Image (cartoon, rainbow, N blue to C red; front, side):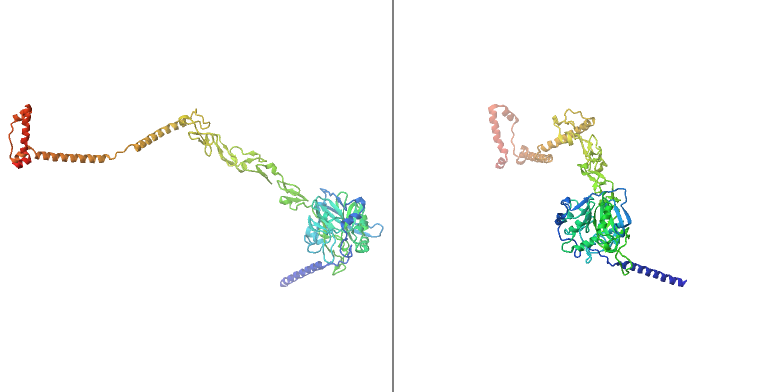
Length: 592
């Protein structure tokens, strides 16, 4: 049992080591790049301008140095159909093996890809067609443009999925591109046409040699247009005439894109460009250009190599390996113009299925338009969102009576005929009423809207609270209120009058108490004075004088009475008596 436990880990380690070795063997087996097929001995492309190409072409073509063809979307058909063929080469004993792929909707299913993915050309890197195709999810893929074998740089014009990677600076080589509207373009382009933004290229790649133009072989014209005069013509001619593995791209009369690849080995098997052009013409191809060939010619299906490369492998030359190349042509599932459908939909088979409220090929347009919602709403994905107080599909209706606010969801209650403001919910009262719910009648003496007007009736009588009319019949409750208010007002008025009368009445200088004290004091003084006079009177009487001096005289009463009666004699008698009275005065008494 212990031996089994020991052997099991050893066996596992052995299997792991074998897997690592196999992986290392697979990863280290690379192309020897021994089958090079170059169009130019030094550099790449001719030195002459686009004007030279235009002036050298046939007069029948005018000033146009390229051909455009509308593409068509064949809905319901597969993305592409790939055919493997083995056929004999006319007027020779050679047989060729290759692949032809018909793409039904090139605008949405074909991409030009950089080696290894975006940024590959900028980093001067190369990758096998398998690696680039597998990373991008290509259904079918074949190698594309040329590259610098010494510095690994991508050559020619390059636009990938609408992104301009590089332009050639006007070098005149055969081009293939797809414009934004789906137009297929083949031929020679000026730098201005490459950079044109009115209908920009979404895919663009450079080849060498325009094979077919409008259904006719165009190789001789291409030799004149693309051959660099600074080099020997024979080298370029050899590139055209030699048999080798070849890759090409073209289109048919229905606007379908055709990918063409044949296996071979330079000077041993394969096809010359003349033979490729004739073969494509037989298949009904209208326009086509040649792409990189020789050991670069590769065809991949679902990320797996389907062709037979011509390069030998390192370290075992008995095998053939795919070469690391630059750009590729990738056929993928239909893609939407905007990959994520602008965030408002889902891309299904190249078409955006938009979420509710969105429309357009890229789901970037609202179903409702702002003009439909104006002036009381805003257009959103859910339709018109109305301003407070408005409702309806187009925000054209005010809230129903009794409702207000956003969505007309809030309620308000206005009585006495008042109406609810649909925006803020405030009650707008009829003339004669006021209050938050119009529950109060205008105060007496006021009428009209908001009770802001004052009655103009005689004697300040109340008026109708709504119309201001003085011939108003007030309700019984109002009359009772007025009656009670009249009593209250009368009492208040009388009280006010009393207070005013008392306030304005002349006040005495001395109070009643003061007068009483003064009166008592004066009475007391008067009584005291009277008492003193009585006392003094009593002390000064004749009886008192007689008692003090013991002096008295007898005056007969009859004489006194006679004096009173007796006329002048009596008068003299009285005078005498008066003189005698002096005897009883205190001074007289003292003198005797």
